Length: 293
Image (cartoon, rainbow, N blue to C red):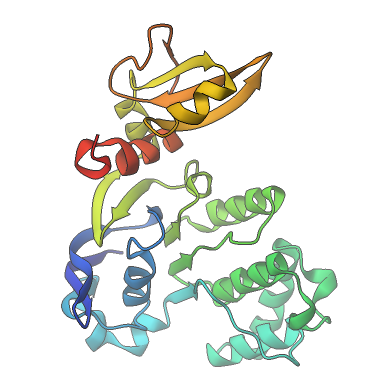
């Protein structure tokens, strides 16, 4: 299986949202990280074939998805950023309706609905109206919908929005188990969503894919660039306007500050082990051409 973006551009009037993206993906989990407004949702919608690019094309196993049409769309499970529900639908109604739209056999649909409802923790709530679900429950229902017909390509746009930390972990476990021999693209601005499950992580900004590496490669890149120091809270208020700080915690009567910088930021700073979140902040907030430092 191979998916390719070939010079994908997307413009709205005078605004260019995507600026010539060319990437190739195979089976496995891909993370798409970037700040809000980077163009992630636009790229996701083009991959899901619900939006056409201004220029360029998407290829599935060498064939343009526009010519493959329904055959391509039948291979996709898609969870958009915003999911709408009919007010009178129960959770089961919504999944049965989704299964019918996907053309699933009735017996297979019932089997999958029960299986997925248990997996996402909604089995006891299938008779409740979707309108009465919490935001996290609606998100889990959307995830179950995307997985219904066992798609070869799973496209998830901000899938953990509204989920608590325990639900996030469950979601990552579900995706890890599902991803074998399939392609999963997970778009998010939350680093922990992809840190441990994505084979490749793409970092996107200003309509371009700026970097594609493994989590370990990003972390290795940050060696020698992450520092710990301590300072009074009063000093921190001013200092944070002049530095990229990834974490702060109280330590006795001072604050322990985690700073991202190419060189030692203050005389008493000591190096510490980097994380993927440090790399994300470095690439989007520190580099001189972006931060003006």
